[in-house]
Length: 402
Ligand code: SF4
Image (cartoon, rainbow, N blue to C red):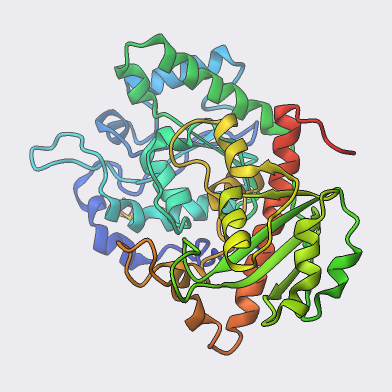
């Protein structure tokens, strides 16, 4: 369940090019990678421009010169130290023969070639220059709204599928168009951070122990100073009639979680209620108010000693819009692009405009293996929250209790 992203290393198919057809009207069809790759950096741009198409190599025009100059100032030779490719291998033109941005379809037609090159060269660091490169390498595996390059730039992602650091940043053509020094400085800083990672292997994630329990009495033995709590519920708000907490997961450290369906009686739920009530155990959640409200409203239990909110901490560490969700934080911090796609369709409300609407999780648990899927998903949420909390506490300088 660590990752469900499959198929990205499928071989390029001749039909991709036949459907795309860009290769039929250019000087340099299906441009091949260029560079001696001595430092293991792969640069992925958008597409060949007119100069690149004439010369048959990437980064030959004005923006290529800006990139080459900037890399040189940081100790990197663009063509000696890197391998250079584009999200789209053929020069896209409009009806008048002028440069144009490649379409989403062209990017998707060509993305198997991009992944084929990643698999062939095995880069240590992949720098994604601009939205098209981001769309090819991340968007083809990302299940949620991708958003703009501004949302992603600056993150250094230890991508577990690609076994490389993914470093999105602005395309040099954007930097050259912007007068503001600040854009130039941000871009240089992004490149500096990417270069630093060349000699650092990506950290690998260990598989946690997920304990699927029916009898909750083991929760009474928890002695951890911090735990994360995650609920899967029938909707967003607990007050509407018919809503309930379906299951919960408690992570007691980075590698251990208990996950269980909420028992039908108060007596059977008692160890959970005592754990929530226990003032000596600090509680963590991703958006505390969600678990807090559902505990109060549906379990009739106040949670004592909330310690840390990983969603709030994400916002403190980076106040850009769209970066605080747990799935996004899991990918940018731990490189797991997808651990939720089997469950995500069931999390959507039947009526999206109604805040009190039921979602489809009750349908999921009626399916063979549906309960196991939901419990596993909930446990992973709790584990990622724990790992994220530990990382954020260190970054923020939070006083760790151990
Ligand atoms: S852009 Fe890519 S998919 Fe399209 S024709 Fe060229 S090589 Fe083939």
